[in-house]
Image (cartoon, rainbow, N blue to C red; front, side):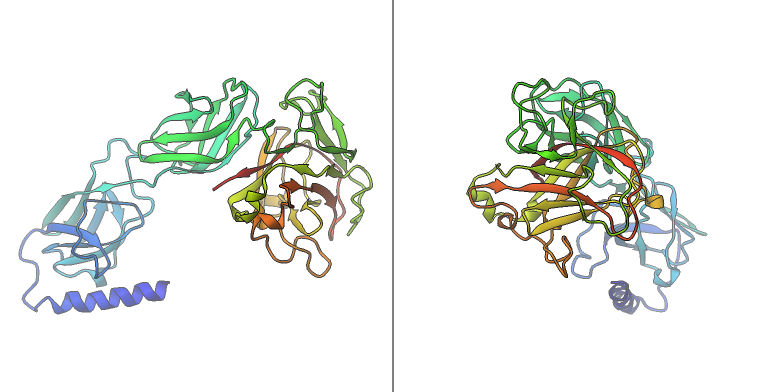
Length: 408
């Protein structure tokens, strides 16, 4: 990629320099005529706004010998080898000042020389907002909910299921996190939206989706209080309990798993209550089997009392496809901990893989939903806790609301 950019720059410099004569040196203060993309096929398309990070061509007069190029007073590096009397090639810095970080930006491009300055009205836009994760998609009324993503700036409102609007929220200066208090959603379920000045971002799954037809299990049985029953649990494995003091913040029953005392490379998941086993259930019609697995995800809530540092949770659909879920493996200190709060986990269904060399979840990826959903729209899901090259240290975790949702 860098080699292609260098070749492009070299080619353009030849064109630009060929257009200049030896008498084309600066004769007065600089002037900016136009800004365009650094693309020879688009150099005739001038514009007055761009995103930080864009590679642009500034065209003008008396630009040779420029000492500074500033976007909204942000001093920006440029290679003087690519500076002629009529052109400057420059990357707009990713961290240049925008309206998101300073509401009083001048929206201008300034070029400084020893002979004076050139000022050109130019706006640095910010990318539209994006949502990567919601801390708990099944939080209770009054709970704090965090939205994680990028460009979460200049937010007008957050919309929730039932057309509820949140205008009281707290965002961090980096635009990566927004927090709010969840109102009572009742039985309404739907996507969350962040509505901002530069666009709208929508969550990849519905909030308050703990009792819909997409739910494999919420561990609630007929006649039990808390939510509509979506049990489908096979009545063995980890303990199904409803102790609100042990893992507060969920509705009714959940699956409580206490892991520990498991040696190296122990795959005996049926021992010690370290599995979640569910009856095959109909979630879909056959039509879904023609769709791409990458368009769907498995979601669930997890809560840990101690750090999770070694155990591998093998999430399985049927006997052929699995994910070796190790949330700790990419985190600092190889430790995953929700700090006794319920956290939503999203696993794209295309991440599920076949068995390879006798190891589940290491072969070919699921391509279509037919790989994971049987005829008649039936889903057979389980999870199993096993060890690899380290023993499982004692830790206590709870799981709730296993569901499959469309994310695209």
